[in-house]
Image 1 (cartoon, rainbow, N blue to C red):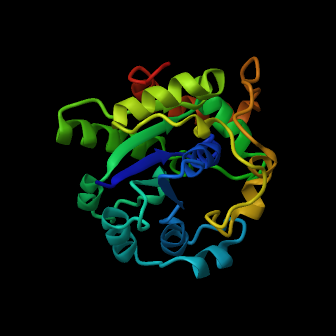
Image 2 (image 1 turned 90 degrees about the horizontal axis):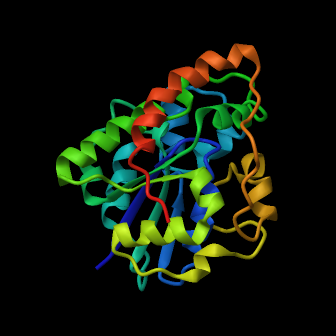
Amino acid sequence: MVRRIAMWSGPRNLSTALMRAWENRPDAWVVDEPLYAFYLDRTGKDHPGRDAVIASQPTDWRPVADGLAGGCRQGRSVFYQKHMAHHLLPEVDRGWIDALDNCFLIRDPGAVVASYVRSREAVALEDLGYEVQAELFHRERARTGRVPPVVDAADILADPAGVLGALCRALDVPWDERMLSWPAGPRDSDGVWATHWYASVWRSTGFDPPRPGRAALADGLLPLAAAAEPYYRELHRHRLTG
């Protein structure tokens, strides 16, 4: 039986480090933001490396969805999918998502916004994925009759073994301590956008310890973080802890 795990995150959420953790399992195969080219092509957003991203993946969401709902590399029992929630535009049919074990990676909006603007100056609520995360969370809960797994980036950094162990139990996947560390450097699985976004992950060999205090935001960014806060809090109260 193949476990197809879709982790719905937003940008600057520890999502790539979490992908590294799953990829370090010998039973797992990972895919990095498979709807990114579709998203850029459809929205016209000017992200770093836009042309290379669009050239690297299908721009039609349908064949991508078919592969995600049915595929996995031979010999692997875990198919881990790192998704950016905001890539799931409204016109994408949600039916294929029901074939996946849908999980959610959240992070305090103030920390997300502070990190995001270091790479891209312009940012709006729709760029951060919180609204789509909430939509998918409620959809999954209604479909399955249970609360889908939610993990918070801050909790992972504070207790990687405890929180990832709880996530594995929630997914009925055996715990593997190899999720706690990995070799530094790039991976063949990294998207072509990695040179713009993954420098810190490439240097890493595991989860960094948490940084004390909250990120300082310019006054002009406070309304954006405040707008994301209700969506974050809604999922945060269901989060798994070690």
